[in-house]
Each structure stands twice: as C-alpha cells, then as structure tokens.
Length: 256
Image (tube, rainbow, N blue to C red; front, side, top):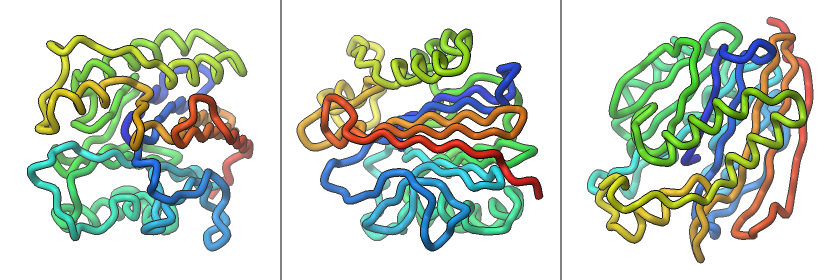
C-alpha cells in the first residue's frame, strides 16, 4: 500500500472516510478483497506470497493498513513481510496499545514501514522511522515517508479529499475514486529525493501509478458511518487502464 488519504472524525455522518491505492509489482500474486476463510471476521485482500495484507477491517471494526517507508539504502533482503503486521493485528484479540507494545521492539527486523491501526475508540499511526502517534480529528495523507510529509501527491490528495467531503452517499464514493485515479505529474523541482533516481521519482509521483511492470494494482474506499455501518469498495486494476474487478461489501460493525 503506497498512498492513503483519510478523514478521521471530520465528516458529520462518518467517523472515518479512507481512500487508498495499493502500488506493487504486477507479478506479485495476490487475491482481491473478501472475508478470509481461515479468519471469517477479517475483510481484506491477501498477499499470496507471504499471507499478509496491505489493508483490512474486521466485523468488530478493527482496522489496519501499512505503507512502505522508501529508503533503498537500508533495505534488508531477508526481512519479514510488513503485510503480516496488518494481518497480525486484524486476527488478534489485542488492543492497539498491547499490539504496538509487542511489535515496536521488533520493528527493526522489518524494512521501514508506517502502520495505521484503528478501532472503535482510537486511531494510531506507528512509523518505524518516526514513532507512535495518536491521531486527532483531521484530514491526513500517508505515502512512503512519514504521515503528512509534504510530498506533492500527498499534499494534492489531501486537498482533493477536503473537496470530496462536500459530497454525500454515492456521489462521495464516486468522487473518492476520481481522486484515486488522478495522474497529475508534478514538476521535477518538487519531487522528493529518496535515492531511487529521477526517472523512478517521476513514475512514483502520481496518485495513480502506471508503468510496464509496476503500478497501482487496486483502489479501495472505506467509510465507517457513525451508526457503525461499514462500506468497503475495492477496484482491481493489475496493470489495466480500467478495473477488471469491483468488489463491494456492506455491514454493521458488531458491538463488543
């Protein structure tokens, strides 16, 4: 997962409105979002290489997502999959605090990451490069650096999110997917320098990424209403210009 924009406790009807693009090499096998057979409470896509996921929610309202922190100089070839940090939380009975207490001492084993964790009461971000933060109401953007780092596409998608929040119902969903399909390329002078070279910085600078071997494989909308109704919609691209699969899920969160 490489770009997430979300409004937390901002909209009068929704506690959380989240829009995310998963960017990955097309050859990496994965399955589209669904409730897992081995963990029926979990709704998420699945990385078929290592078994984890990039974003998901449970019927009880536990939410998690991960983005990579881009730093090619510190990549560990034998590091465990960061997707297991997401699935580990979703399949556990632990609170956010207890889960973070468990993983923070081990975070150095992984390649650098940002982890979003939410439940009925709280929303946290933990970065292996920036520590733990409890989030206050607001509009946020997260890509492959720290939360709200002023990368062009993060700044751009936060502005688009603010505009989208003026819509309601299906119009809101449509506007969020338009936002996730944005292909605006910022000028070279505004691009970050993360050690991958100018050509790749340009390629990765758009909200929706397209290339021959790597790009935005899926776009996901998650909306949690204040009445506990969850709307989860995923569009799968896998290198196609238009989605070849659209999955929709709707349910009310269980009360503990």
